[in-house]
Length: 93
Image (cartoon, rainbow, N blue to C red; front, side, top):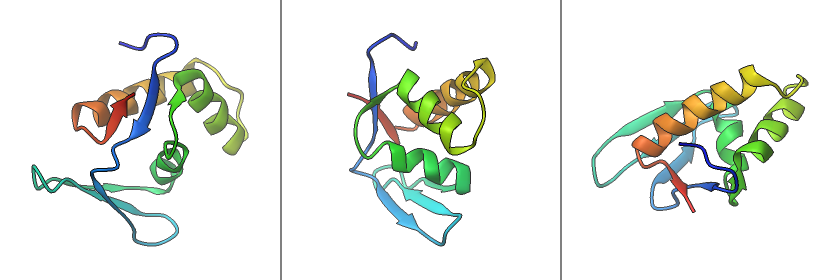
């Protein structure tokens, strides 16, 4: 599913509301779905204000959390991207 060179960006047709420093709510007016994100997920979404590829996302999240980029970080991001793509919150661009 994750091809080199594929770019990901948040779906700006969704309503994004920052509740506080640690919580983000995404509302899909088409489906009526509301998704609540924690601090780490909110930070991840801020990276998707512009198109980014998987390697860049892994590097940025690793840097922000002061961990070595590796398989654990990459697999966590791949899992999250897959879930959010399925819910149309993140788009392949």
